[in-house]
Length: 250
Image (cartoon, rainbow, N blue to C red):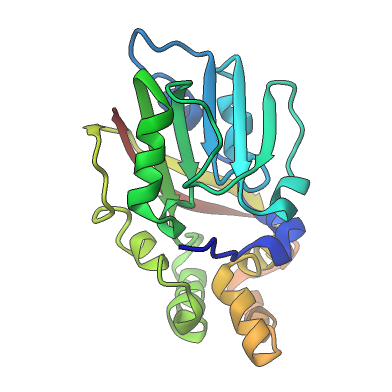
């Protein structure tokens, strides 16, 4: 199964406008490995611009962060304990039994599950763990949320890649062949003005595919309604995304 690249063409925008993960999330997943595993080495798979890797690096001696997109890796934020590499999820190039924790943030729904999970089992050390997480549409206020939902489900709904269905189902139905560990609730939170929020909407893969197919920006078309619902476009508002975590051990 070839790498389906949904983000290289707008890697800079992805780095600029994607929300940051709460500190409690990497702290939770870092606590998943059991002895004899320790906090030597983590693998952040499909790292994008390194958002999750930076949080994991606060808890591990070293993080290898991979992405199949060289453009995404080029936008990654440097960190002294994070080594960025270009590699597909299903063929990491990592040594057998070398990894204490594997993380995948907002990306496993694009993978070949069988091949990826086989790769996870190959690279995990005894006691090692895997954590996957995702988030769906942002929530701000009902009047804004309805417009966001109309954009995602209606205007660009047919342009989502097939893997999007797993996000719609909040990862409840995603294959997960590991001994599962219950995860607490987490939430992304940003204080954004409307221009920042519009920039985020334009990072959606469905929006990018819509633009490529039809030559027009659906976010620009929606902006007058968004502005009316938002109020002062320069006034920051609370933007929240509930996070769903699936975690387990090998």
